[in-house]
Image 1 (tube, one colour):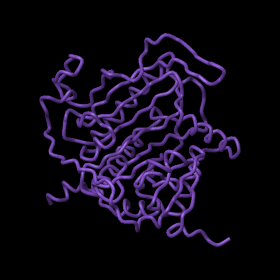
Image 2 (image 1 turned 60 degrees about the vertical axis):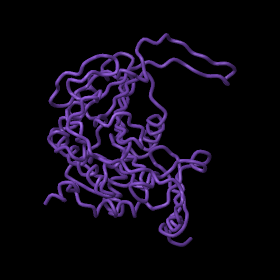
Image 3 (image 1 turned 90 degrees about the vertical axis):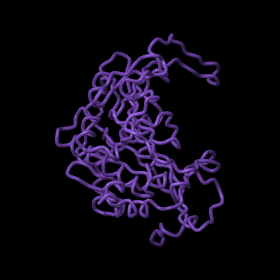
Length: 351
């Protein structure tokens, strides 16, 4: 069998975190594009907007008034997808109609009082404050009875369904472990049982050795376009020390994590010189009181843009009916991101 030619021929790659596969078709980058061209978001936001539900001192949709906060601000979502006061029920009709109640709560985390500052444009000290706030929320929610999993995430940009442009993240805490973390937990456990150590620890060592998909590295974290990436410029932030959740981050690692987040979000913005849309989130061990020695904390970034600020990747057709597919290779994406400046284009343009 000849040496793999990833750059010219279609092939499949396995996602070692979920056990699923992705089809890579690098030759498709040559096809002309006559599909949808999205309108680029014009980033002309002001530091404060009087009609923004999330800005300091403003009234929210439910009538409550935000405090005049000067750092991060957290509150329970006014329109939560999960609720705590749900009657317990189960349905199973011949294993064909299966359902059960789900309880939990959703929190909103405003990164700062500034309506115009995304993570990419915040300084690292303020990103550290966001991480510390998320850590405190994780600890508080994880200690509550009936909370077995906590999903921290951010949807940035209207292309990712963000309903309010004020930079913020969300925390969903719930009774059951959701589908994707369940898949990852299965793969983590299988690998740990066979090898005695973390699958991401070994993957990190291999990526450091090959140096083909690394975007950025500091003393505590590695940013890589994963070998199995689905989205065009998808990345993964992996701590070099195996930890289960953000509660285990040391002070130096919090600074390193802030540096990694600042770097990748800045590089994203610099790619097409826009406020780059994405969905991002942390995958952490369940909070059900059990030990998870196999779990390795990590953070995913899933950005949709492909060819330009106005052409995005669509998950349709084959992706919906068969399996994910991508055109540009992860190695190409990593090279592009790696070579981008870590100085935000707005700042660089002023020099």
